[in-house]
Length: 180
Image (cartoon, rainbow, N blue to C red; front, side, top):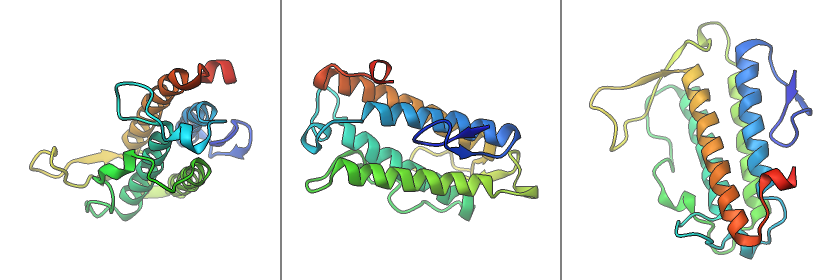
């Protein structure tokens, strides 16, 4: 069984549940990447709806999200990762390019996949990881199993791929379904 963030037939993932969840995540990443294929940097930075979201901002946020969740999975210290609450992660800054943001996203995806693939023994899908305390967290430390973290990433990626599809369609009429 194979998958990657660029093409669902490029990279081999581990067998079983871990591989299936990584494959599902890669498929959602691929939909986002299809949607952001082709726009210029100026288009990627442009708002096209009432939302503040832009194509570049979505890609930047997804890269940061994968970096943050990799840190949470690997460090398991319950500490807030750098940049997790930085609102600038949602904006394509002056001077940033879409190819640069896409490279950042690809690197973050590879690192997260490697971290999940490398989990062994006590680091099974059932192993729990302390989540960092955020302003919206309950007072006690919350622990999630690795499985739930992957399911969260799949949901988050699918949600933002949908946002990107709407932003892109308002930009130039393109959408992921038509570009597949």
